[in-house]
Image (cartoon, rainbow, N blue to C red; front, side, top):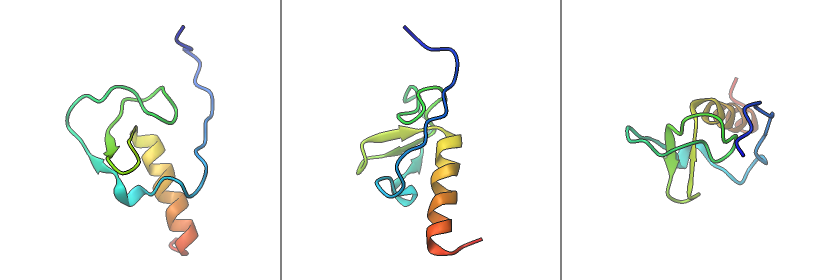
Length: 69
């Protein structure tokens, strides 16, 4: 059964690289990470589709690792 309450799910840092994700305009279903948002980015390498919120988190974490503010 679908859980209507969003639970905070954070992906492990490192396994997903935001640079491999491309924005898509077709309907890919729900986000692979949080399963609540509509998938807006897809990575063939990671075989994952993620929403804008999870993509933004990946970019922030990637920038923090590289020292970008």
